[in-house]
Structures are given as structure tokens and as C-alpha cells.
Length: 237
Image 1 (tube, rainbow, N blue to C red):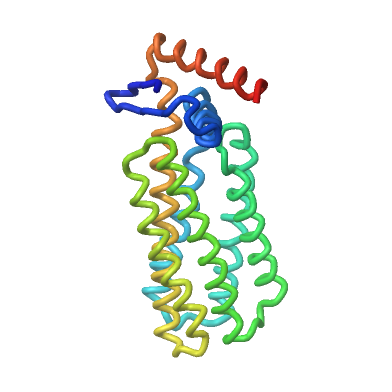
Image 2: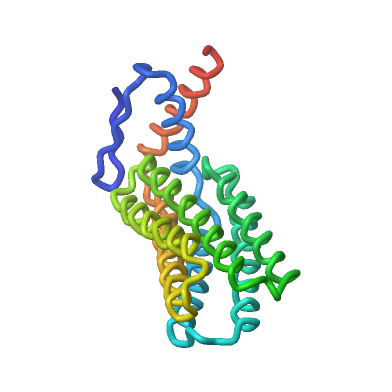
């Protein structure tokens, strides 16, 4: 067993007892600890956009249909492009960057659909938006477990918010024929929760971003030794 202490926090991993656990731990740990995550603030920007849009829905639940479609399309296009950029920039540092890329492509697709079909029926629109929020929430739940694997104690915050987003999005999908105000409120709650989740993720990524800068020289040397031992082990496997 090898013990590493980072900022007073003990990180323990079990050496060669279970190869699959060993490989996964070393792959995620070394990627994140040895390199700073780039553009950690992008999920926060996306989250802020979603929160603002959700609050707008709260204040104007009976806004014109075309106005809502336009805002939905712009928000998904904007967030999708940023997510794609973020995932590609961090493909060497985040183990699950592909999920973020997939989520970004899906958001862009939703935005393009809304732009191409602004007269989408009032019945179909909640299904499209609910599905988009559902995918984003499931994505956030996956990221929460990634944060747990990196040793962040607040990983469960994102997990709880993502579960709330999943529940709200399912309610939107199952109630496409709800009255205008109640549907707008469900969508508003869904966007606000999804936005807060993205902001929480951004805060956690900031911690990972700053971690390599706080490592002592001795700890960096120990991590480098672990890196060499890891690759030696992989090549022998």
C-alpha cells in the first residue's frame, strides 16, 4: 500500500491487489495531479447562462412561444460549442472528456433543431428540451463520480443536483401537455438546477486546476516515481 498526503488529506491506494483498480486509479490520478485542467471556468459560464435563462422563465412564464424557442436554441448552441472546446482542450487531463464532448455535440444538435424548426409543436418542444436536460443531468452524475475518484470530498454536491435535474427533466418529458404556466415552471426549475450543477462542477474543477501548483517538490518526485512504476507495470501486463 502506498500513502500520499496532499494538503493534509490522505489518499490511499492499494498496490497490485486488483490490477483493474490499480490501472484506473493511476490513470486518473496521474492525469489530473500532474497536469492542470485547462479552462475550468467554462462549465461555470455555461451554468450561469442556464441559471439566468431559468430565472427569466420564472419571471415571464407566458412569454411568446417564438421568443422561448429562440432563447432555447441560443442557449444550447452557446453551451454546446463551449463544451466541445472544453472537452478537446482537456482530452489529455480528464479521463472522461469524451462524455463532455458527446454532451456538447448533443447540445449543438438540439440548438440546430430548434433553429431549423422554430415552429416545433408545443407538444414536441417539452420532449426535446426535457431530453436535453436529462442527458446533461446524467452527464453531471457521471462527473460527480469522477470527482470522487479524484479524492474531492464535495463530489456528492454535484451528484445530488444531477439527480434533481434527472427527476425534473423526466417530469417535463412525462407532462408535455401540461398548462403553459406549470410547464414553464418545470422548465425553469430544470434549467436552474442544471445551471447550478455546472457551476458546482466548475468550482470543483478549479480545485483540481490549482492542485499541481500546491504540491511540494518531494511529493512531485514521489508522483513521478509512481508514474514510472505505473508505465512499467502496464508494459509488463
